[in-house]
Each structure stands twice: as C-alpha cells, then as structure tokens.
Length: 251
Image: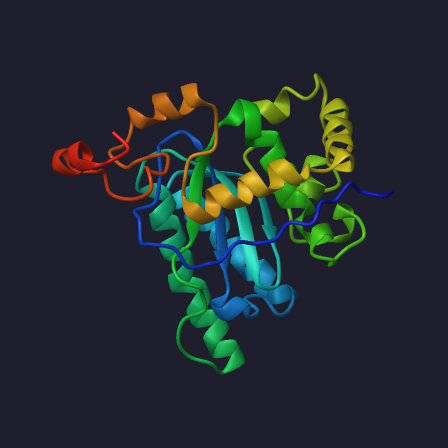
C-alpha cells in the first residue's frame, strides 16, 4: 500500500515562554522532543516501560489517551484531560519515573527532554480524526516504516483491531466511524491510507509548537470563555499612542 504522506518540516523549537493552553474535557495534541533531538527510546524495553507508566499516569490524573506515537526522538499524544491540572501532572509524573530509568540504564545524567512538553487544544469535529491520522502516520513520514502497521509503538494496531491496547480510550468520533467493530476498523485503516494533507499537517504542527488553539473562529471564541490565557496570537508590535497617531503624516 502506498500512503499519501506529505513532508512536514518541524518549526524551530524555541519560542517565548507562554503558559500552556489546557482546557478541561477538550482534546489536546501533545508533543515532547528529546534534548537536542537525541534519542529518548533506544530499545523495545524503553518503549514498553514508557507506555506502562503512561497508562498508570493517565489513570491516576484523569487523562484519556485517544492516540499516541512513540518515535526514537519524540512522541505524540492525543488526549483529553478531565481538569486543567491533569495533563501537566501526568507529564511531570512520567518524567519523574522515565528519566531516572533511562539515565540509569544508559549511564547518563541530566535532562532528557527538549524543554517543556508542547500542547494545544484542537477542535474535535474538524481536527480530531486528522490529528489521529497525523500521529499514527508519523513513523511512516519519518521513514521508520513502510506502513503504519509495521511500527509497533503507536495506537494504530488498536484502531484497526490487530490488538487491544488498554491505554486507549476510544473517542466518540472513532465510534462514529461505523456501527460495528469491523466497520470502524476498516474505516480507520482507509482514513490513514488517504493520508494527511500538507496544509492540515502544517496547521497541526504550527498549533502545537506555538501553543495556539486550532479550530474555527466560533470554537476559538467559545474556548476563550474557559481560560484566562489568549487562545490566538496577539497583534504584532506595540499599539501606537494617541500622540503618535495624531502626528503621523499618513493620518
């Protein structure tokens, strides 16, 4: 099978420090990179240990995991926290367990992550299934597998019925893909075969890297009511003062 894989270029990792956008009971795309894009997983034991701790942390802090992909140097999650603290507490708990394990095993010290994890809210009706496809296709896009089924460390095999993954909480939009498990699994497989467009892939990456909400104007306006943090970028530059405006020859 030939997959429609667009080539996505990751934007720069540095950005002005801004509090993360986390809204309870909304879907979040989460990314975490290894320090200097170094490996955070080196063998199957690393992947398995991380997933076991992720399952424990997600349950402990009330975070539903809908999709994931663990790649050698970074990871993706599609998750719904039940409150505004759960996502951050889950990621912190994971770091406190996984990083010491990794450092002991490979005789290293210091940080494993490239700064803070990145996360943003996505509008489900428009972007949930696209984000799920993007995540589960990431090993193919990265050249780690020819097909998503060839890569063990994503949620894809769960969604096509090849294995049961207790970590995954299936979202209502996944259930809406068919009336029976067979229909849902076939529809999910077909969805990934269609791939993710360049436009959608870049929108997902830009949103999570910059921390801005991804969705329609109406969704952004609604979500703005549930957080004190801005959900979209402000205007560039400083507003002109009244005096400056009055003396501007263009006015």
